[in-house]
Image 1 (cartoon, one colour):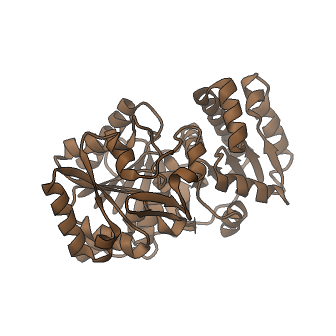
Image 2 (image 1 turned 180 degrees about the vertical axis):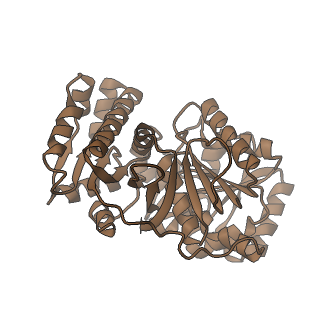
Length: 418
């Protein structure tokens, strides 16, 4: 294993694995911390569900993943978080970075959630989503991690005991040597973490090259674009041209959507124009109504003829109203449990192709299905590949971050498997 990765949610893990496969690395994703020896792969991504749990629990899970990756010989560690830097002043990004640095014995790393291909760019330390600041995007209304400040230096400094500095765009644009010099200067000034600007894939290549000798890299999936070349140049990696090939998968198709992001709302609306969909009402769930059984009865009558969508996706205004009535944590938990039960029910009906929208929802679904290992397949949209579960029955899964994917993502993804 060349690269060992820890991701703080399941969709983010497949996003990172997709990037590494695109760079010619044979990549396996595990669900949770595995036991025993690592699979035969150039990179292993350990997917945790640690983004919104208590910071001390996120640290404990991340350190357990690190211990397993070190035991299996990984040469560099990558901590992956969301490209919108989802976190709160309590964490969890900062506390996990601090713990990983301490165990690895390193005094310096970077923080760079940029993913320009999906509209996430960093300039002067400010994170943009498309053409607007993070704090003006839909993330400002996120039900669990509302992002009210786009300045990543400030956001991260509130979470970490290390001094946070900035490597500005003009330095990145000057190339790898200049960026390494900036890292050295920041370390001399007492900084332990450098937020790094990036506005293009070329910047990600530069950043990746500058991080070749770092024991720990922390970033979104974008910086992984520049890492395979480091191993290749060191003579440690041969390009795996067939890394993304998956076998044909037969069976029915289903979609479960729990994300309430702007992108997923648009995807659900697009699907509903011409295809069947069933809406899960959170208030009815909380009242004990048999929403899951009703949705499964509805799916049973249709899934053999065409793909079906079951969704709890709602507008930000409706999410806020439900949270005010039920509490954010309780509302999120009952939706996750319901959609996970629905996914299991679809599999029992014969579904072998599942699309899951939303990181928390994806975590609940794969846990409910008992999936432990995913093989990474071809990219659907930037940041979202098809994957294939190990064991029987083999299930093709597209685990989509709420904010990712084109408006026609659901139909496009299923078309790829025909």
